[in-house]
Image (cartoon, rainbow, N blue to C red):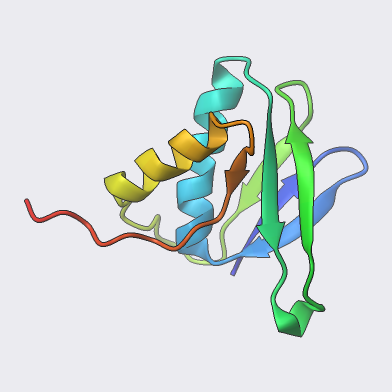
Length: 103
């Protein structure tokens, strides 16, 4: 389980390393271009349920901490879906990983 850490004072949100790796690609690509956007996620029942949303801005510090030692292989279809969400008025949110297309 990895952590997404954002802001000062910071918030820390736990995500599976695989999910976090895909979020990292999308978030960093938008921040690199100087784009701001909203990012939302849901909490598990074990975490008390509910959901949160934040405004991602390039000037606010962020960090991605991974629990595993190896970077997960990225699913291009999932990255593309997440990019579309990040570019939408509703903003980025975690969605289920789609099946990878056959090569």
